[in-house]
Amino acid sequence: MPEFLYAKDEPGAGKSGGHFDYVDPRNREVQAEMEDAVTEHLRMAGAYLSPGASEAGVEEGIFPVEATIVIPVRNRVRTIRDAVESAVSQKTGFPFNVIVVDNHSTDGTTEALAECADGDNRVLHRIPEREDLGIGGCWNEAVNDPMCGRFAVQLDSDDMYGDPGAVQRIVDVFRAERCAMVVGSYRITDFKLREIPPGVIDHREWTAENGRNNALRINGFGAPRAFFTPILRSNPIPNVSYGEDYAAALAISRSFKVGRIFDPIYLCRRWEGNSDADPDIDRENRYNFYKDTIRTFELLTRIRLNGGPPAARLEALAGR
Image 1 (cartoon, one colour):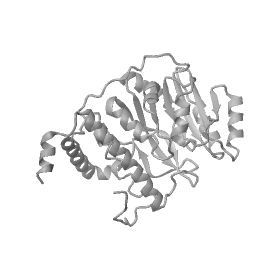
Image 2 (spheres, one colour):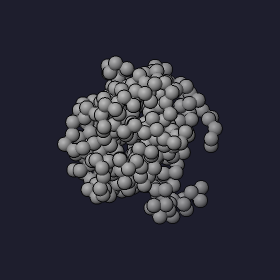
Image 3 (cartoon, rainbow, N blue to C red):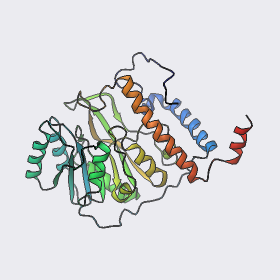
Image 4 (cartoon, rainbow, N blue to C red):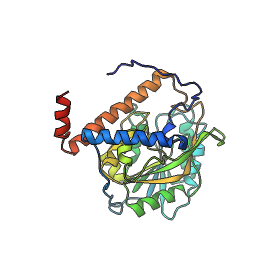
C-alpha cells in the first residue's frame, strides 16, 4: 500500500536515527533473531537462496587498465579536489585510472576537474551529453566508457580512501576469491576527517552462508563498493541518486560471490552538502519506499528463479 498509516518517534535517536542499528554490535542478538525470521520467511515464500554463489571469471577479457576509480559529481567544488587527490594517490602494482563523470556542475567543479585532468593523465574528465542523469546514470556512463578498467571502484565526490593501499586490497580480493563484487568498510567522519558517531560501519552481519538472503532485510551493502566491470554492465544501476547501487548489488549477489573487507579502508564524510544529509521525514519515507520497491522486485525474481512459490505454501495460504 503506497500510503503511510503509522508513525514512530524514537527519542534520542540522533541524526543517524535507526539507520545503522543492524551494524551496531550491541544489537547483534536481536538482529540475528530478525535475520533468522526473515530467512525462514524467504524459505516459505520460495525466495531463499542456498549457499554456493557462482564465481566470476575475473581473468577474462581485455581492458585498458586493471582498475578504474569512478567518481560521479555535481557541484562539489569544496570536496572534489580532495577526492581526486585521494584517488591518484593510490599505490598499486597495476595501472589504474580515474573516471570523473561531471554531471553539468555550475559551481566551479568543472573548472577544478579540468585542472586535475591537466595535471595527471590518469584523470579522465567526462561530461555526459544527457542532462537527466542521477548518480546511477553517471555510474553507467563511466562503466560503459571504453577506458573503464577490469574493476570499477567507488569513490563518492564527498569522500576519500582511508589509506593509499585501498584499491590494491580490493583488487586482491577480486583475484583471490573470484568475486563479482567486493565491498569494504568505512569510517564516518566530519568535514575535517574527525571520526563521528557511529564510527566504523563494517557490515559484519554479512556472511558467506546467508549474506545474499540477509541483504533483503538490511538497508545497504556498505562502502566502498567495487564491481567486475562486465557483470555490472549486464546489471546497470538505476538512474536515481539515492540507493542507486542497491538494485544492482542485489541482482549481482543473487548469482555471484560477494567479497568483503571488514576493516575500514574508506572515509565517508558527513557535512551539510551531502545529498542525504539529515533528510526530513517525507524524503526519508520516499527513500525507504524506493528501496522497498526494489526489494519487492528482487523477491519476485528470486521466487521465479527457484521455480515459483512452494505448492504446500500456496495451499496453506488458500486454506486460511
